[in-house]
Structure formats: C-alpha cells, structure tokens
Length: 246
Image (cartoon, rainbow, N blue to C red; front, top):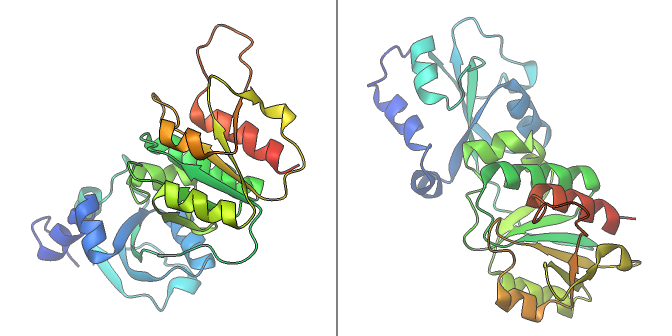
C-alpha cells in the first residue's frame, strides 16, 4: 500500500490534474464508482484503479490493475471534497464521427466547465449524434467538466476540431448550420423539419464568433420575455436540442 504523498506514483497521478500532462500521457482521472461504471459500460480503457484498503471492487473491474493507497493519499489525488474511495486512470478515446448523423453540436470557445458538462449531458439525453469542440474551449477532461457530464462523456462521440473546417465539411454533407445569435436572427421555433442540422453554441460572454456566424446557413435565437439580457448557454442548448430533435 502507498501511504506517502511523496511517492513517485502519487506525484504522477497528481500531474494528471493538469491539461498538459493529460495530453502528454493521453490519460485522465475519474473519481467515484458511478463514473468508473459508466466508463466500463462504454468500453473505455481503464489503465489502473487507485483504491483505499477495504473498498470492494466491482466484478467487471476485477481484471484491471489495482494500486492500494491510504486515505490521505487518495485525498491528495482526488479533486473532490469527499472522495468515494476509488479513482481510475482512463485512456482518452480519440474518436471521430462516422456514419449517418442528423444532429451535431459545435461549441465555440466555451469556457465554463459546468456549462460544457451540462451541454454534453443534455446532448446525450436528447439523442445528439456528436459534439465538436472548437479551439478555445475548456478541456474536455477537466475534472469539473467530467463530473458535470455525469458519465455522458463516455456515451457520445466528442472531438476537437477547427470549426470553420468542420462546418464546411458538414455543409457538403447536406447539413444546415444554425448559429445562435442575439441580433439578425429568427425565432428558433420557425426552424422545422431539418434532416441534418449542425448547431453552433458560442462563448458565454461573446457569443458565436463573427466568422462562424458569416458561414452559418441561418441565425436563430430564443425570445427573452423578461428583463434578463440572455439565457445561460447550457439552458439555451437544452431548449434548442430538444426542439431540433422533434
């Protein structure tokens, strides 16, 4: 059992709190049995389990290498206030979208981890085919993003790309690209019966980049009936995704 936070393995696990190290090793941490079970059910590769003594490992994880650690070491590695006793080192699943897709979400410079996680979770629930992350987005494997997805990270294809290139590619495949905008936009309820749709959601403060607005097929918005300046992007995403799936 590892009992010292100065142990070399502990130092390496802690390095995975940083994006640079996650990219270097192509791995990331997940905390708690729910996320680990979701990863197992979705056939993501778990390299290693980090477990406190006495924790009962699920049967479907018995073949995964286990490193036992003391509670103080687990707390050092965990990024939650109340660790559940088990953490996993998971390989990134560098997927790309293939096949017949009908609804794709494109995120433009989304910065808030909670918003990104919520959008991914909602996209999973709404039956979205893929989520594409543009440059400037918060890291998909950020701990707060992962927790906000509640495991949906493992259920839906998600990948990073240059959005302008992806938009042009989708348009050649027959997609109509919709972009959320506050001005020069139509009410989202006027958009109906689209077979293939790509929906661009923008940065929390700045919205969708003007260069992307210019190449979108249509700009849409959600009416504001009260005095709020705008809707939270996660809430807006949910409204639009469910509408477009009708």
